[in-house]
Length: 476
Image 1 (cartoon, rainbow, N blue to C red):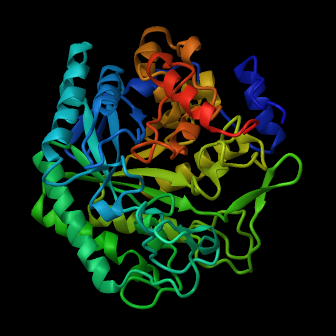
Image 2 (cartoon, rainbow, N blue to C red; image 1 turned 45 degrees about the vertical axis):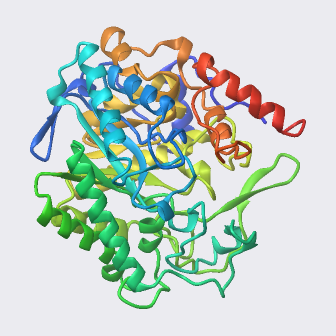
């Protein structure tokens, strides 16, 4: 497949956007990225956010391990002021992989140490710790639980792609969905995890509602009966109940959520070039949140816009907007130059994916101008992401610029931007999907390889990458 990123100047990039009938404005002055902003009662020192980058490098009991501590120390020393801690399960059954962090009585002190090391690294690097905001993303993986799927609803788009690892069977209509009583117990688990998070010193928690994990799938559960399905009010009942209880019991804890605003439909690779095409589906599509039922390649944002207003009114002080599903339509989530080993070649130019992120995030920010919104989708822009982010912040299209994969290759990106106005060219993420390929490799004694950046963090992840390559069939 041809390479997409061939730009020699910002003008080349903007011209490509115009060729798609869209506009991408780039700003030479990066000062907006270094303005402070209020999040709840706290002041955050700049507009640069490290997205929740899961390392898949914890212990089987859910504790951080050596590489986990290392990653958070590097993030802390890097100069970004909003550090969005990775997906941390609220129970063992909620984990997406056997090395995912899990916040419980036996792991709380170790995760507290991880946060402490992150803050210490920030101060040691010469930064003021008072304007750093550091939190954890609390998650229930639901359909993607590594032990067994826990379905919020039967989704005709995703059920044929969902395998119960305990039996090896594909989910079908006979597979049970989580009951209302079980969801009420999960509400309790979220509240318990929030108490742990407050106790160990999290500045905020994220109640994760993206990528078709449990709370995200509930948002699209139009075909579910009972208290948690059908109407939009019911589909948001669990998240609103959890917010209300935490606000009552932990009034000083800042609440955030990373939320899907557009699910889209799954894609699969076809043809000689293995380009992604939508899986067979019937219209209207009714279980994909934020998606036009009759034209599911297009967003329909009436429900997401209503939800963010309800969340603001309930007490959410920080929003982070995402799209798609990394297991079903990854080109929506993270536009990339090359797909992961288990993926397909993108059916669209990656810049179109970036612009979709920007457009939807802007509409969300306009709907709740009093809530800071983190924008996503920046990594594919490579050296031009700071100019795009500065323009989006200056124009009020988002409050924070969130960088994900790019932080694994260059965790100190904020320092470089502050000092020179540019990234360190030698370690810019080129979105070749090495990190995702490591993460997707399960043939490991602990059931999961740790993930990082083999090209630019070679000392640690180079040997792991060599192991993974040796286990793969030739040509894969």
